[in-house]
Image 1 (cartoon, rainbow, N blue to C red):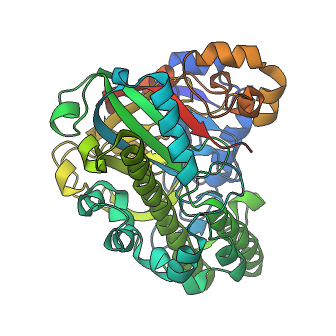
Image 2: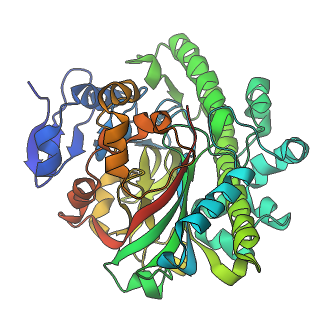
Length: 474
């Protein structure tokens, strides 16, 4: 029997019961609800609703699916003074996120051989795949502390970007409070991965603007139909993964000593104001800044690849940054006049027009929210509307899985994948390596986007379609 009971349009609720301190809600439209059966992910929301200081409600996004502790597509807000912080409620890949670059190139002007040249030039600079190391390891080692503390502003100062990039990155590319002293030596040993994509659903994608829904796309974002785009999706790599593991173990032990009731290891938590709580936030900020630097360095390398293949300078092709958003992060924010620590795990902040925390260039629009689909389906640029305050200014971060990686490899064949991808170009010829990322393993991105647009939480700005997707094998 489902725990979810219909509450209102596209909203389902689990009333507070047992150890829950607040309700849990999940947003699904009718299309998604008909096939939704992830009761374990809903139970994870209920577990999170039992933690001290949690605010009403704990929220599940349309792309919700089972995760470690908090489900992917989960939002947990806690009182900034009396609440707890949980490493598992942020996630393993701290500040996994996505950024979008525009170009002034008509996508149709690039034939397949030239498109192949571009993706090969990017791969030469940005190694994809699990465990791949940066081609700039010596420079990373020399400047690691500054990357962790100062973030993208230091990279730009060092020549890896443009000054205007900083206006188009969440937190300006540097989350305050980072302290490398809070990071374990093991995590620091795993820091040599700047300008690498990683595996799984991370990618660099060349795409085409398929449709413009709002004039703001042209006027504010510089996007137009038929235009070539570049989307980058990756995070803090092994560095952030190690920090999450380190602090999950630390929090579990500390909570036992404090006699805090923890529902699962994945939701190990400690008071924000405790020594381990403050230490985690300082280490997490280091990983957040590392991830911002990773996407910035990849941007620099992508720009260089365009110059190499197409000639001239990177500015000849625009390659301006539209925006960069974080997916896995905990930040202090004010909602409803109250200071909260908002854990977003597989979720994106969405501040509507006029919100004072928007970057100045997007104050009158609301910052762009980037929602990638899968390597064979559409991605979206959307913005938040005032009603999104009900989700602590949070929306989904992608399409969300319906098949685990193992199940996808078992159920989906190479021929099915080829048919689904159509003309989308992938590196190499062995499609078996990409079965776990097949579009069939993901929810319908249209239904996911519709869930919030139908109830006025967001509005569409632009729809993008993939031309070539660079993914790393697991």
